[in-house]
Length: 130
Image 1 (cartoon, rainbow, N blue to C red):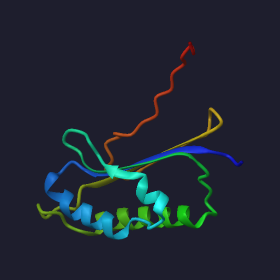
Image 2 (image 1 turned 180 degrees about the horizontal axis):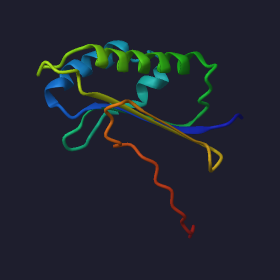
Image 3 (image 1 turned 90 degrees about the vertical axis):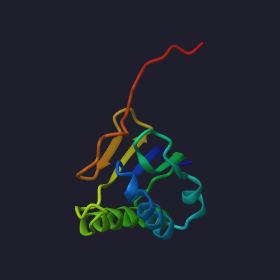
Image 4 (image 1 turned 120 degrees about the horizontal axis):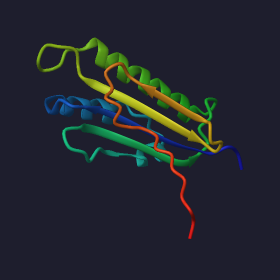
């Protein structure tokens, strides 16, 4: 069966004028594994433009080709944003955040690009099941 995780990531900007170029970049470069494309959707939040990636109950193993392709995309996304100028002549304000929750309670992995606003976070709570 294997060890399963919940993985979420966001690729976004708070500058609406930068969204069209970000959308084109993601559409052209995001890994082409069908299951990955199905996990990607536009962000539906005020004053945030970008994409939300959600993969639930997944084997997120570094040795898998699709996970390696995802990580390569992230490196390139961050590198591209850091090397280009936006519409205002400043560095692109693209951000990336990632959270992986493993089956074990203390297995949490988080990553954020330098200019991330922490819009993706972990909220633990205890509930009594009916």
